[in-house]
Image (cartoon, rainbow, N blue to C red; front, side):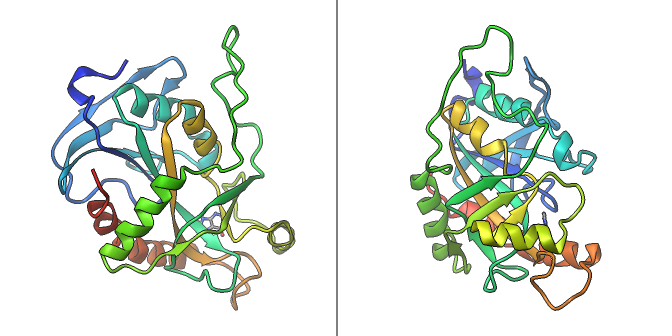
Amino acid sequence: MPHPDHATIDLAVIGGSGLYNLPGLESASRHRVDTPYGAASGDVVIGDFADKRVAFLARHGESHALPPHRVNYRANLWALHSLGARRVIGVNAVGGIRGDLGPRVIVVPDQLIDYTHGRYTSYCDVDGAEVKHIDFSEPYTESLRLQLLAAARAADIAVIGGGCYGATQGPRLETRAEIARMKRDGCDLVGMTGMPEAALARELTLDYACLALVANFAAGCGDEAEISIEEIFAHLAAATSEVPRILAAMPK
Ligand code: HPA
């Protein structure tokens, strides 16, 4: 049951690396949600943003204490759903595999491949739970993807529509051979947090789309022999600074 005060949440946002709060979120209140799956990554912050009621949750925690494989994805989505969210945007830092997806490019992917392991990938993973085989042919909600693309265009922010997100386990970056394999598989982007988030959102019948921010060329895809974490965060900061304007232009 949605929390009565928040049945009107228009949009929920899960911030990834570099996005630990949502600038412009006003009159906000913090909500710690007890879930059957344990603790979410932190408080859900609900407030007014542009013309919308927005719920924000920092995926890695507000001090980035949780690596991708230790994020409690089930609790995070459960918390947002139980507060009344119905549309969720996952903001994810990624590496670019495809040549035109270099640092600071923003992408709204339309496909994904899951290479993660050992994560809780389903709400069925509990004794006595109903077994659900969700359709996942299209892992993101098309109407929400289109809204994101239109919002970016309305805000005059360049964004690429479509692309396949490959979700890796992390927290280490990939080897060149791993990225070469992912490229052969058809991945355009690589990130560590896109799954199981998308699948869990679908199980809860939440609309879900990903706003992917390219921080670096993935291993072997750029000119550099090594990927520097400082550079990743510098590019990420630049791309992240565009996110509030895209979200502000989203319809209610
Ligand atoms: N690989 C995986 N995840 C990432 C990368 C990468 O190169 N860059 C940012 N997130």
